[in-house]
Image 1 (tube, rainbow, N blue to C red):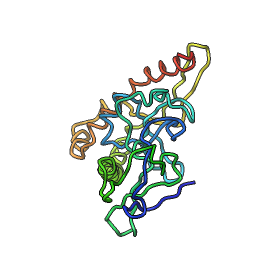
Image 2: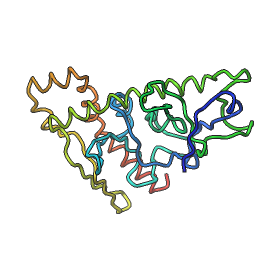
Image 3: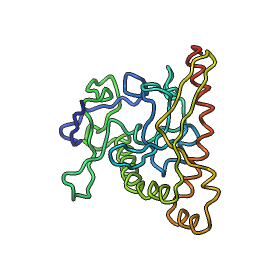
Image 4: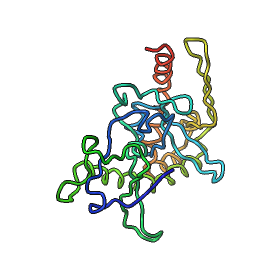
Length: 240
């Protein structure tokens, strides 16, 4: 259960955070949210798919790390085998909070229930130095939180544009593995490339003016990463 609190230099002077990647620290996840502004970096490593919330009907984007819950095919004994980890995951156990709904001033919160939070002086990286000033790690966290918050606030316009031009379609992937077993991915959407190619000038202008074309093309390109994900799964099953 989460235990969020505002981070401050008086109460948390000696707080440390473990920054390595492992299943024990919460990295064994099948997917995480990825923002359109991250698609260029994310598509070099992960397939990007879209999921519609059953209650709100709104879309979000996910970077896929595996084919089943709790499976991260990029996670191994040496850590996370990819050059980029989406901000929604890499920023944990930190998050942005505000003192009131109308308050635009963000605050750095930390989840004290996270296994990454330690008080042991022999482990982790400090967030504040002896003088109570932010360390380089905390400065980086604050920057990343700001970037993530801005990207999250901007993302509804992107998803609205995809729906406006009817560019998303349900997606099912059947994955036959080398050992004879099969896995299926269901419940996701991807960009319909045929509809994308058929867009007229007005539609393309609408997407371009909103800054949506680049992340749209990056999402299309990311589908090619499924072959790498399948290869990683085969190696994992084979014990390689």
